[in-house]
Length: 96
Image (cartoon, rainbow, N blue to C red; front, side, top):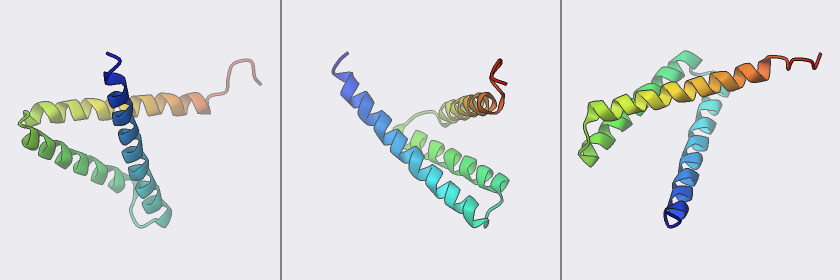
């Protein structure tokens, strides 16, 4: 098991770097005001679907299964973000 830890850490670091690069690009587009936020979200979802289908084809996986997993990841990430934002916006009981 310990042998898997460095590989897992490397994969997590790669994922974090990719997410940061995507966030930076999206924030830049939003700052420039050239793309409506909802259209940007749809574009990101569209590209994610394209990437998922391409990855499934390249790896011999079932595209529908992989796209279903992708939808689950998106849904979970959205829920976690919503919970985090709500926690930040709601006053802490007794701190008033």
